[in-house]
Image 1 (cartoon, rainbow over the protein chains, first blue to last red):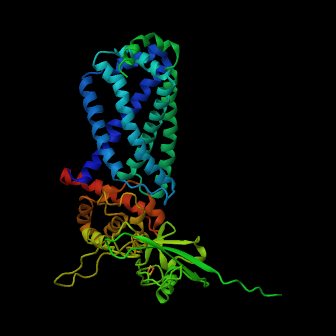
Image 2: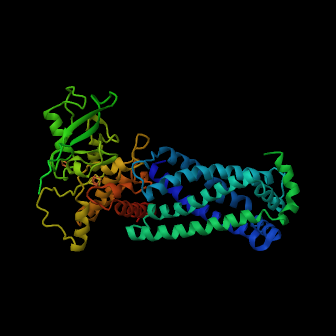
Image 3: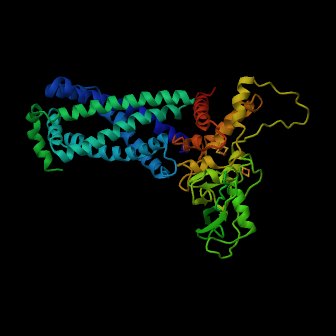
Length: 221
Length: 254
Ligand code: SF4
Ligand code: FES
């Protein structure tokens, strides 16, 4: 496929559906903060009760993620960072967008293995995911990796939106690009805090009840 | 009041040289007596007159290109102290020493500081950066351009194809065939012209080919590096808008 269209699809998939799923995931996690272990379990179960959930996942998450991730790695490979010569804010964001993309991709694959794949192979039930997360969030090393992964994903999401608006010709002049920078920075702060709050909430003991299942998981990681 | 006799100052240069397009580069140091108002080109001229390097050995004069000597032709672009810019406008007084001079390696190096900017001119041909007015009869006067539009279009017309924006771009490199910011901005210029507008689609389609506008990654270095202050990122975003619209129009067949 010609570069123009493949790049446009890459850009579009980053927002629809991936950015939307990212927000949705944030809300599901935040149910843990608002409603505790039962709130989180309810929201996970609700999500999985959606009709045709298999196809929603396939076309709304798996395939877009694969395309955006693999093509994104290619974009990152094609870049030749020059921060040493152009130590500028926008150039930093350009470079970090590529680095955070790589980190996020690796992190997501690992995170999926720990959660979704374990559900798929029958090691963990949906109701036990809170326990799995409790298990991860209480181990300092894993927690640190999660914090890095989450921050990278949040940056990639927010700055990606900024870039998307330019690539589709929505924000054209310098002022609109400045305003969208500020808005996207605000978004970054909000999503990062919400994800991290949820992550640290998983450390609460009430999530431990389901953690026994997570013991099984340990033998896989 | 006693006059102080200023000790004769010297200026040190470290120049990256290359004898042939395929040979490997090396650096050579030069030391010249300071003269008020000297710039990088006048220094290179002095080396040409007296090709002796800092260790006192006579050497082959350094090759470079220049024409206008007033920052309008773009021929003398090189990397000075890490920044791509015009050598004729680089005053020694404003430069940190030793002055490091390198060719813009984004382009093929012909010799020393001489580079081959053909890809920029080919890019202008590819996007048809002109207004076709030739015909077999007098077509009469074209439509007029609104003054407000003329003002910003004039800014875009200042581009001297110097290549600095390509040198500054992290996406213009050997791994991509990205056309670079300058040609994209010229498409905006010619698409804005009331007569040029009649061929707008052809220019957009050229930028939707491989190596076209999709190569931009929004690092926005170009707009900060352009010596002419051309709003390159505005041009790129505007052409993003025009190509996106064109894409949908083509799909829907309108
Ligand atoms: S846009 Fe500016 S930096 Fe780029 S070639 Fe033209 S004058 Fe040089
Ligand atoms: S000689 Fe023309 S820009 Fe320097």
